[in-house]
Image 1 (cartoon, rainbow, N blue to C red):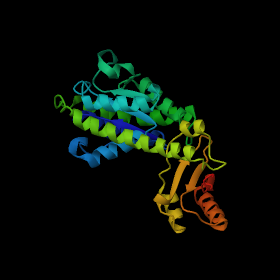
Image 2 (spheres, one colour):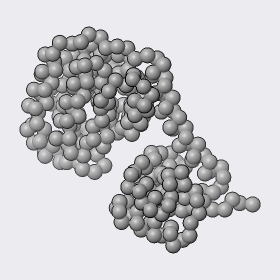
Image 3 (tube, helix red, strand yellow):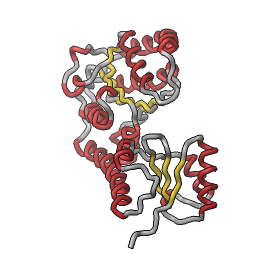
Image 4 (cartoon, rainbow, N blue to C red):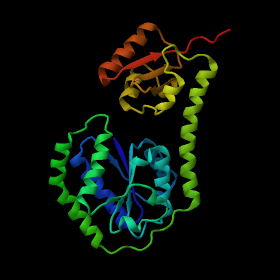
Length: 286
């Protein structure tokens, strides 16, 4: 599970980096992501952050007194809340109380970083949503209690450090640029689906539109790409999507013979352990 760690300002960044290294010690299946550079440095950074926002399953917003009014922090929180259920976005409060949280961030269920009970509840919520790698509540509590002092000590040092003042505000142009990237990604996916439906070339076993829309994420797997290249199929020669039952559907845009189709399907299944449905669009109807 990818957990997006949002930060703005020096102390907030330190909190995010602390959580990035600490979270997998408690729940190994968690994959925390935190930007390692100032996102305002260029469009490449914007694209990177946009992709990570899009692929996140959980969002933790690292809030300090000096950054809660940051336009960038509130923008990322808003982007996460539109993509995820609001119950999966958590402000993580450092040196600031829940009662002092104002503005858009106050609509979310905040976690008090000084409260062992609060932080354990946050981890329990993450663990509950894991599709694989979920640990029992008893084991989670044991591991958490052993690791708590490490987190508590690191956050104590951050709280006692001197705030650097109000972080630089993110420009409206930067936020608009990233929002454009996210919208274009989603628009491209919807157009691909609409094209299949309008053309009448939708394969017989392709998932129905509601199922497909319920889980519209593309599979961006190096392993799948590598295997497809073994059969001389580059990424522009096929489309990949996953239906809600977990089956990975691959539509070949370039025809091949049945023997190659079967070999490809067996190869993918044996290497990844996943279910695959590989097909070619039927000939257009007269």
